[in-house]
Length: 232
Image 1 (tube, rainbow, N blue to C red):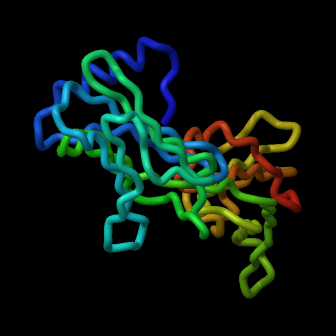
Image 2 (image 1 turned 180 degrees about the vertical axis):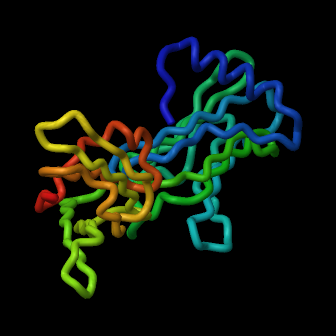
């Protein structure tokens, strides 16, 4: 999660300094794979030589790993091609920042999991980092379903894609072509059977929005057209 402007950063520092010992401040939200992730951990005065310890538990793992430690020399260990951790003076205390250059759900460095910053022997900040991947090459098609007499009763909408993480969610809208009517179907499965009663007389166009289950602002996704259109 990134913070915009100096005001945000000062507010964050004040919040962390007044946490109770058993409270942990979280600064975290789902992030798209390939983007950078940053986590800041400020702290007040501390008499220890070892100031910070950064740990991580990868999703699905049972053990915690020490990622880095920072001390009064204002140096941090463990920096590599995947992430950087630094430390600086911050008033009468210090501030350390973790930056994962490109978050990934795969080897060689799976950055999805619980990141924790410990300052002066106490957990101060934590993030259960969740990664998402937007659908790649989504396509949707409509299949007309009939009963034993050949009467059209349902339309099956089915969507496919090359990649998504962790799961795809879909919403559909039926639009009367060259007409004023439109109706939205509830979000959820990317394969569903729609009763013919949901459609309008004449030509019907089905719009689909497909996103990741962790993707924010799903309503802002650009729709794609389901093929073919349905005529009643």
